[in-house]
Image (tube, rainbow, N blue to C red; front, side):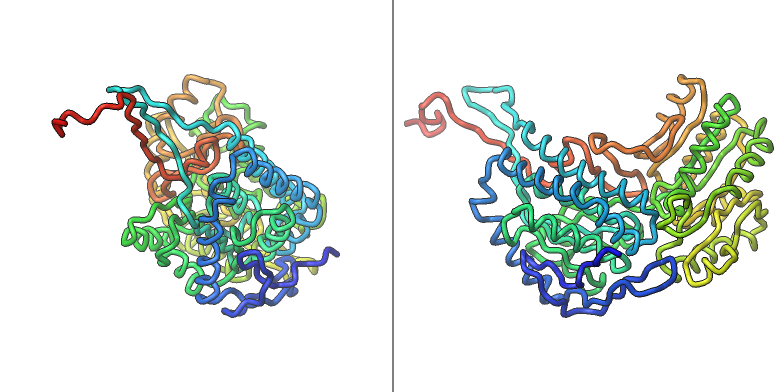
Length: 492
């Protein structure tokens, strides 16, 4: 049994007791308590921001050469890699995810810090084309203090995707992890601290949105908010940011279409659809929760998919055989069940799942069976709203025009999956679907080198990629006179 973080907060390089609302981290398998801690108060947020502002303005950090700052990121990456087993167990206890998944998320976080370090070392400013006898330059500088707000469903990976580029850019960061999963971010703070990041540049402050989140967004010394979470919260942040004229990055919800054409490799498509919706127990913004199957193969494909779904292993997150683990919290499980109940009331046909699994091993946990529902139109509530659980709606379609229209007929535009052997068709549909990411003959594959973000209600801005660092910087233009002569307007 890995020793869990002790519950103290990481405030500008110091470990302190929180002074805000009480937070309890539960193990989703059985409801046992991992840790009870107090989150940060608004006054502690103010203290962290003040110390971050001073640390960020210090020439020792602001003026540090990129390759020197990169060394710190590399040490953080090494620290994560050296603690993957420990991080994995902490995150599994915090979120209920399988150890296999949390180990992969930790490895991904290490890769994010290493990539951003390498990108920083090779990120050039620009000498622009002169239009007069001047030297013209476009340079980039850190914004200042960044507020990073991350979700509960994949903490360490989401944390790294904000911390690594923000620190690479020369900023300080106040990280607010989700109250349902506070422990993983505190463990990351320990690793960052040991890597030698100058004191004050990072604070990890779990706490309520009321005390911590709102204070970060409204504080005049926060230069940018980077938020991953629900769309309604994202809208509130955007409205508050507008009053400050503050930039934001918002990675929000999704109701992603997955499309199976009649010429697809059926085994490949079934595996991809299963992984796209039921991995992470469906608790993923990019979950492929609307499945469109071409009408000519609809019945046969859905039958094969249902059989494969029933064979998925639902179980303890520490069991290597488990494919579908418990949901994060009883309230969330009840919300997922409520979506299914509403769909059934709307006339959906239940093809499998639709309940908690039976048996002694599931009685105390937040388990919910992988669920497939059919018979609803694309306009039904289940096809419009994000469930964030292991629930799939299946719908038939006739041709490209039909599936493009149905796929785009949704408020969200985060991701899409396409299965077909016809590459020109795949390309046409991928370009026609309004979304930030499209996978062809695969799903939920990521690379830190490739930008990620959404369209429409799925968010604003992009993370990852070399330009991900620039999202945390301000662009400045420099003009240097090369003539040495007074401006002719002065008539000197």
